[in-house]
Image: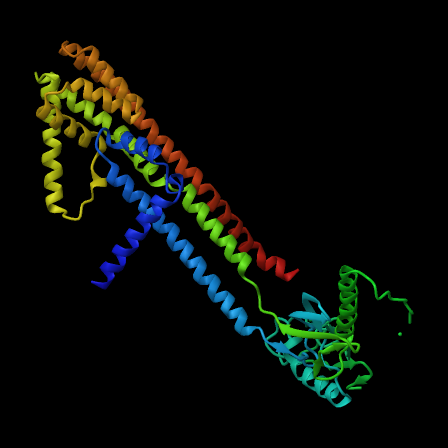
Length: 467
């Protein structure tokens, strides 16, 4: 019950918004009316058009609601994460320099500047004891690092990965071998010169700094400067402080100054990522997708209807020719075809209760509707057929209707002409099938090219790896 009420409330809200906002936003009513008339003829489709526009508006509302909710969560998260800080922890010795996003406020009298910075924080300067420990730990990790593709140091069958410098820690390594003709200082292995179960001793001299295992201008500043000049001066003073911070690497933490000189206050805040721009871009993209696709559904239905008519027209004309040759007049032949379709469709519908109206065959369904209308209102069958053929936009159907109109009372002559048209339609249908087959082959070309490239890479990869 609650779910129904929510759905009903959402529907009514979308309906009100649809009337309040520009008509073109959810699809121009006149354009939609023309498109629905092309598919459904003179049938009143105002309710279908209204429902379609409401669904489009619901999509806009969902997109806007998600955007607002995400923006609020993002703003709230940034507000919670934003706090004043006085220190920044440095990376441990051997770790890479890290970049810390930060917001800084500089206050002087009535002047305030705000700036977003990325402070580059260097690793902590190590003591002699820490450097020795670093070298020892690095030496332990070398055993696995130099193996390359070898399984262990006890079974060397290929080149070794002898590292000369570790960029992360700054450690330099010099390699020496007691049998360089078998294993040289580059890690190259000559198996032909090696004796059976020969032992080779490798030495790595690891060095960091000195441990091995072994910088004025005097300016006259005017106190009567404009506010812009004050702000520029503040920015220069701030940049000077930032340069000192990024150049310093002493201590575990960086002390962020609260003052510059005696009278300039500085406040530092940790800064989280601002996702507002990304949210706005995603919202605009979603809006544009909905806006430009507002006619896609009805255009798809019209295209499916045209394809259905083209697919069924040769078979329909064969039935018509067969009935005319059997002695039936045109109106009786149409009535017989319509009745047969209704019987078949109703039988199928009874067996498949979940059948949708979109599963109807457009040509036969329209002929059935025309036949019912002619029977109930005594309208002209040929005029209704002409109206349907013009509305559908299918040239072959227009040509068939013209042939029937010109030869309405000519009996066998009409059957002969329709038979000729039917033969042409079957040829045309065969050509379309061939074109679709070629199109499918074309679509498969790109995946096959990718598959061929992958196959070539898999084949030549072992040879390339041995080079």
